[in-house]
Image (cartoon, rainbow, N blue to C red):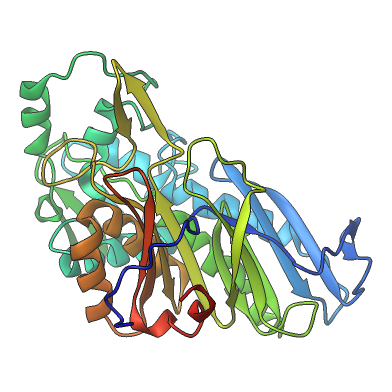
Length: 366
């Protein structure tokens, strides 16, 4: 079989259900079967977070995690009106990045989380020829998937979409230095940013850095299915992720197969969960920044492996917009990235395609 061949088996999915296959139960924060490992859980970014780590200092880090994620949200969440990104979106022309999102005062505040998300988003925008575009926010709101009132579009207004398209593109946003402080400038008040396709991945990496700074080298961080695995699992081998079918009717416990993950990140994007249907037409949350419309192509889901989760998160989203052929070519062209695609077929079946670097992980499927 060539590396470009499709596997026509009834396949795996892309919603990642994280599972410790040893079926360890938790008692409080300690695993019953391996007391060296601690599990910390909480809520963030409209979803859950779960961190499993080998506790070298018998330290419960929940307060530390919660504080870090709260600080991140105050910079990148469009659902918090006072956040850095919301203040930029509300601004007419520019936003001083020394502004404290909690007070609105320009006091030299370190908006490092926002800046990191912005710079990575611009990088991926460039490498994907604009198919990953954080300025898509006005369109996301129009289609009912953003921070505005959630509503189904019953009649598509093409003239409205055309008018919003003039705000789309990273050329409408520039990071500049003004009076020795960084300023984010927009070309029009209607230009808005959305880091929802990258912020969860960044949050995963953030918690990973907290663990590493404490000398913890064996851990799994999961925020809403975006993951980073380092070192060994409680079983003494690689962490394993369960993968289920990309089907609207499938439950999260419907595991088809598993994939080992060690010293890298994995993020998945798909269109089979977050969508609505009007008059038999399905509108998904993945908006194509080139057309202004929800993207509809044969790619059901994309799972991207990368050294860090922010990168994996961004490229998984870009792949869904590109479609199976262009997404495969993109990932194959970028060092240290691999991808696993599930593709819908005309007869209703599913096929799988993955980049060469994953062949050893899925060789049992051949």
